[in-house]
Image 1 (cartoon, rainbow, N blue to C red):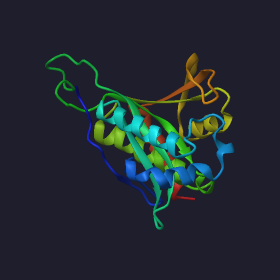
Image 2 (spheres, rainbow, N blue to C red):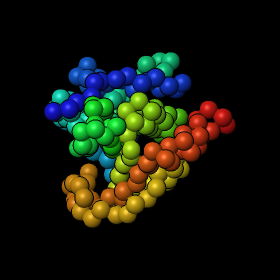
Image 3 (tube, helix red, strand yellow):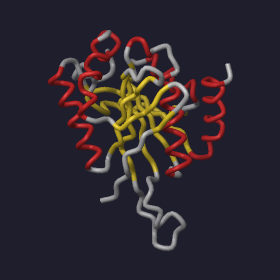
Image 4 (cartoon, helix red, strand yellow):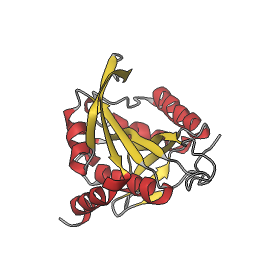
Length: 209
C-alpha cells in the first residue's frame, strides 16, 4: 500500500493543519455557528457526529486514501473549517517509465470542504485551494485534480469555476447527499498543463487586489 505523509501547509491568511482528535471541540463550535450553511455538505453537528467525522477521516488517512486538514485562521488560531485531499491515486506505470519509481500520487481529488460563517467571505476557501493545488501539482507532480459538488449547489459551482476548474459533466446518483438522497455531482478537473494559468488566477484573487 502506497501512502503519503501528513503535511501542514501555511499561507498568508490560513494554515492547513493535519486534522486530529484534539480539533474536535473547536470543530464542533465552528460548525454550530450557522448550520443552515450546510444544506449540501455533510458537516458534523454535536460531539458524537464530530468524533465520527474525525475518526472516519483518520481511517481514510491511515489507509492512504486521504489527507484531511483543519483550516486554521492565521493570527488568532481559530478553527474555521475543514478540507482534504482524497481519492489519492497511484497509477500503474510500467517499469522503465519516468514516473515508475516516483512513489508520489498521480491524481487526487480535493473536497469535503466546509467553512464556518465568519470565514465564508474571507480568503480561507481560495487560499485553501491555492495551497492544496500548489502542493498537488508542484510537490507531488500530479497529472490531474478533480473536484465534485452537488448539482444543486450553485455557490460551490461558481467558486470552482472562478478558480479555473473545467466542468466535465454530471455524474448521476454519484454519492449520498447530505439530505440522504442519491446525489447528482458536477465533476470538475484541473490538469497539469492548466495549472500555471489557474495559479496565476488564484494569486491575483488572493494577493493582488
